[in-house]
Length: 226
Image (tube, rainbow, N blue to C red):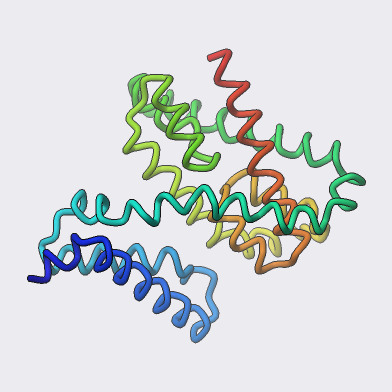
């Protein structure tokens, strides 16, 4: 009975929403960046699936509606970007160069680590696009002969780590300029990190949204030469 409910679209979406609300409540109570609502929601969903014996793939298939909303949700970031269009015009070159630095660092460090660990070409291709939004990373991985499922997992983990660590790193590295903070977050942890950037400030959120698109485009151009 429970398995049938959780593998139905309504049941899966309801469980996802409840877990995220609980994660948000827990973060407000504890006030720790480590308790990111998305991270807590993922942990709670995994726990429920383990306790009920629901196959992960069946639950994933039931939540395709949520996956379909990823594109529109990312596009909505254009609203905050438009509101900060003057800021973007003043800092256009630094934003582009910052995104380029982020992309080169992300792809370069992933390639270096994969080489040091002796991973094969398929796994390496799966890891390289980890810092761009999921839709782009999946297609790049597929074109390069990577394992799409691994790419999705690594991309989501990268975004969650970015959202968790962004506030700490901004303070630790004393990044005071909102444009710099936003570009750094968006270039390294795509839409999930941008959700945290929006909490830091409107400028940070807007520049992080810009960085998602610019970093995605630059990553695609880099992959053309691989």
